[in-house]
Length: 154
Image 1 (cartoon, rainbow, N blue to C red):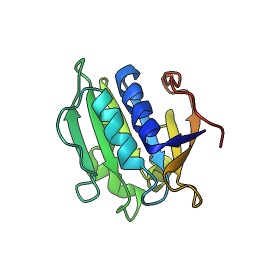
Image 2: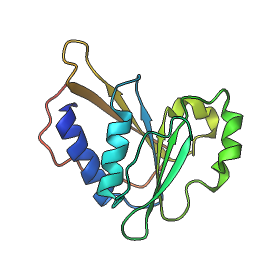
Image 3: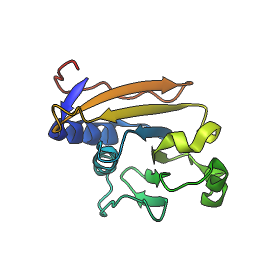
């Protein structure tokens, strides 16, 4: 599906409001594709009130959300190898009440949880204000809520 940046934010907020925990969502795409925009929107919808800067340098940030949920935001861009995940407490992710958002999930390799969603984002060169969104279910994760916006096909 193809979304404007505004629709991407609206969808992310909807996801954040509706997601059940625990859930893991990998956010894939090139630099500038909108991964952090979508992560912040999901966090906002989940009740996070603190600013959510990209955790590029800290690698992992935790935020209190509504309904006793916690949003865990990881940015794995700077990892040299998946083994570095152990230092982040990877084995405890996701916790029972966690919504886990992983930017650059491909850098986790085989250490990504068996059951997760992968959302791929692409900014088409001819329409840089748009985002092509691909959703892939990996294993048997908790369901994603249905998409509430009228999106155009890409």
